[in-house]
Length: 329
Image (cartoon, rainbow, N blue to C red):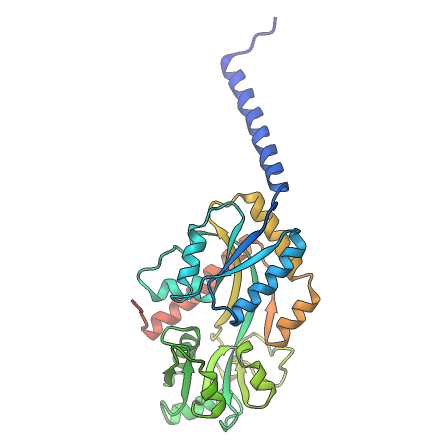
């Protein structure tokens, strides 16, 4: 008779249990998704990020074979929607669309944030990047950012810049520009109304913002772009110089959105969602061209790449915010 030690028996049992668990996890992942998925969008309905979220939701529906619906939960600088996403069940059926504001800016602006940007989410993939533009009223005489900087150095605060409110993306991007160029700008906050009406009308000189919000008026000749972020000129705007050409080599505010799941979501689900995002973005020529047309780049990342991207982006915004001395609470 063959005799086994008690330890050997337990080791064999543990190995068998591990194989069973891994096999069950694999099967568990293969069955996902088997019902509708919800993406919480912490943006107002009809806004640019909301439209981008709905675009990617439609593409994910095709890839995953299940409906992907968008639920808008705007407010408190995206904190309402992001908190809801952090507290959702980590079952793969509730996701949240994060952004520059929610992950890279808000944690540096507020002392009390109802979520932890590093611990409460499992990054899935970047969706896309939008270059920041220095957009001016058509009646502004300057042709580029270099000429604007020259005026500001000669006449501090002689240029007015619209913002969507203190601490908003447009405000912080402007403060970053002012600090980097050694100039002073007069910022005019528009907390409840769109600032673009007054920029188009010439009552305000410029605005620092992601390009899509201005692109219609740029094409109509009512606004003009003085500079764009990016290491090289954008292929859709070859005549527009970069900020680096004006001497601001470290000026790189970028608006982005990306897909997250609540922390604790099973890895097989995250892997399937990440693979689906690859197909929904990099293999979608029509959507790639659409983003490119308004100065953007549709771009997917692996969860690891996206995690590293957020860490770098957050560090840059944190430095800019501290340099501007802005704190909201």
